[in-house]
Amino acid sequence: MRALRTLSLIRPNMGDWRSSDAFTPLALAILAARTPADVEVRLFDERLAALPADDCPDLAAITVETFTARRAYAIADAYRERGVTVVLGGYHPSALPDEAARHADAVVVGDAEGAWESLLDDFRRGRLQRFYHGDTRRPLDDVRLDRRLFAGKPYVPIQLAQFGRGCRFACDFCSIRAFYPDGVRVRPLASLLDELAQLERRKLVFFVDDNLFSTRPQIDALLNAIKPLQLRWACQISIDAARDDALLDQLRAAGCRIAIIGFESLEATNLKQMGKPWNKVAGRYLDVVKKFHARGIALYGTFVFGYDHDTVDSIRRSLDFALEARLDIVNLNPLTPTPDSPLYARLRDEGRLLWREWWIDPGYRYGAPIFTPRRMSAEQLAEECFTAKRTFYAWRHVATRIARPALQLDAFQTAVVALANHISRQEVMRKQNRALGDRS
Ligand code: B12
Ligand code: SF4
Image (cartoon, rainbow, N blue to C red; front, side, top):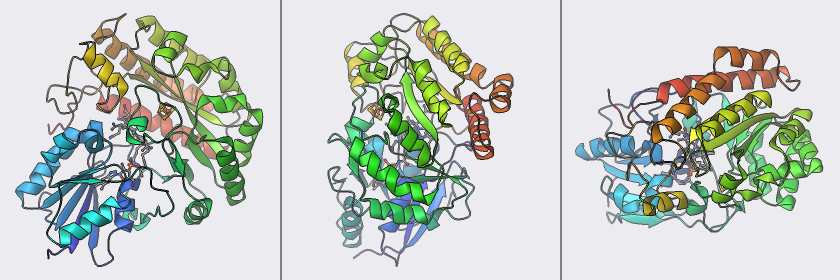
């Protein structure tokens, strides 16, 4: 038997700088809730504070995304040098378990529920396995979180919650279908409502579901159930929601104040190539924006650039659209081929990747082009996206958005939109050209 008295849960940053967009890491609260009560659990979130150099728990568990992989591996190596057993889990280790296993004693592929308990049991019995597989078809009927982990830490004052996992679509750049290949699972409403009832009413709730619109009956049930709670919340939702005026009315009535929509591209040819031709089903983007704004729902629009029909002009026109449509928050990113995506496989097979393993390559810089686009140079893609983001978040535009918003924002929405613009502006400037895992 091995002692398991102390467990460190770690959320790495992309590098060792501090971040202003640190939201509470739900995955680690899930691990904490599923750890026996006799274990002392500590959370170290590197986005908030430097990690202690002398932490020596019995077990360290690190959540890893592709952008944090290089940094996570360095942290894992340092813990192992101190003799600590290290477990890695999350999107990136699930995509590349063998790569992750070079830096860990055990790797969890898929969801934590079930796998984590087996792992802890094996650890205590001294028979830790190299790989554990969380079942991504397991019903979400015992999802629980221990939010005490976050107490007193300076996270962004937005509370995260999750109704479902997975998405009914399969866009070629997105990690979600690779991670959750079997589609969408939602939690029983009773357990979600119990959790929401514990949250602070005065703060925004952000549903992290990749697409809150799973099916019409499911979203109906959710909206009807949460309406009486009088929460104000944000969600990611597919654009087809805008086809359904009644659904938009219901969203607003149930407390939706900000919707995040993946517009992705103004070009129909690009939408087709990325597996998102349905993005036009709700009509012109401008009309979609107006429909949300007319109901007092602020919009966070996201765009990606670098598909085969994109030119420098496409990026500039998208920025113009975002400003003219008066989107409240925007993301204008170069397309990022994560290793779990069909996009990555295609670009690799076409010989267009400039960095094969960009996520661990010491030369790669955040925002730099990862592949050669067809109709502009790689440098133009990176530069134009950065310029578009800087322009959208230039003070003059931020000030106009807050002072003269397209929709009548209430004081609460104004505060959230102002905060989101401020954070986005800071992060755009902070991350660009930084080496992943940088220690300089
Ligand atoms: C909210 C969110 C953010 C927030 C911050 C999140 C936070 N907590 O601070 C903001 C808006 C700031 C953000 C930023 C970015 N994000 Co983000 N984000 C999300 C989102 C929507 C929800 C995250 C979440 O809370 N999920 C719920 C928890 C419960 O799920 P989970 O973390 O996956 O954990 C489960 C399993 O993975 C597993 N697990 C996870 N970690 C571990 C660890 C161990 C030890 C074990 C055993 C198990 C385990 O167990 C959990 C279930 O039981 C996800 C999509 C998604 N649905 O997850 C994207 C997502 C994680 N983001 C993504 C990206 C790309 C980014 C950015 C890089 C975008 C950009 N270009 O700048 C940035 C930078 C992120 C960074 N690393 O610094 C990608 C990551 C893809 C990948 N392959 O890594 C995702 C998956 C979106 C997508 N559709 O592709 N993001
Ligand atoms: S709709 Fe959004 S979450 Fe779903 S596959 Fe496409 S990009 Fe991913």
